[in-house]
Length: 160
Image: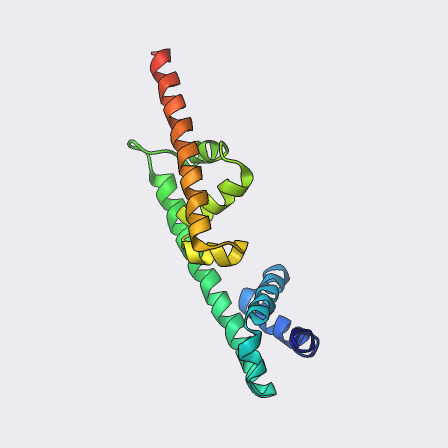
């Protein structure tokens, strides 16, 4: 069913996404996310008529675009806050070095959760895990970061 929808609506939906996003790369990502959402909602789509299926795809694409815009706004806000952070906090470069201590898979989830504004449920959907699995990963990442920060603090104290 999704294959049929993809073959019928791909081109016009891609144009719609391109108009919203302003560039082809983001439009293709948005189109892909839309059809991934369609795959996970087959039961809903099967109950709809053809016109309703088309409308559903357009609405999902629009909502995903809005979600991406919100996430970007949150990322910009967090980025600005990081840049402004000086007294007792970490600069953007220091934060990047600290996060580099995490394995890439943990780092990616940690950044999306704490800097990208994602919640555990959204991350669980994205990574195909349960929300409790995401929370366990985040707990492990925090533990690693605490240990690294503790080591750096001891190293700093021993230099004085």
